[in-house]
Length: 278
Image (cartoon, rainbow, N blue to C red; front, side):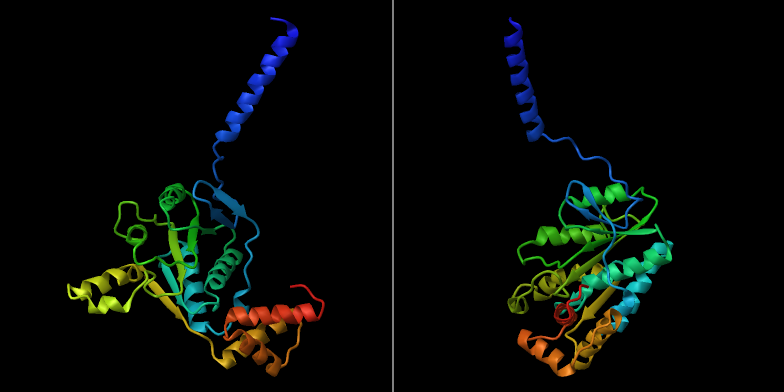
């Protein structure tokens, strides 16, 4: 074989090897679970998030009782004391996930390096994540955000029930779950359940069984006009902005609702009018 033919053959083998590498990428490296304040679990690996973006607890208004309960529970988990899995349910835009992030950030400020937040999905890969966290010398809060199962998705709901407690793969002692949902029962329910002639109570109990696994269940309801204005006042004072109440109320009427999210959108509008960034 000539030297030129050898080079051509080698080039062809390199292209084949490159193609095979693209088809079978190398396995992701082990995650350093002690280094970062937050992670996103992709199902096969974790992506580090640094810094953890969260509003100061003091800026979360209109949900004072819920804020106190969540913050205290996260501090318990951080310190190694007994802590609850949490279900934050209710009206959209009332700051459920923002409160979870703020509570973790607050605990990290008080106890640096002791706790991390992980955002994940409630699929089969959660068992792999829990196995990785079991032996880590750190506390973790796993956030399952905006969760809701269709009535026909009983398998996913039962897996989550098992992870909360009762199953052989239940979450380890250094891990707690925080779930946000627009429904208290999480699993979709219908009025027809009440009319089922065969053990209707059993049907309803099965739907509520998942919600009952959470030691801390907190409802978030649509805020009043006063709460809405108080949320805006807190943000504007923090960012050095001013606002008129009639303008803020007109903003909420245009959107057909009052919530923490709508209040934040209005504050963002105020900053934009003033040529400011947030």
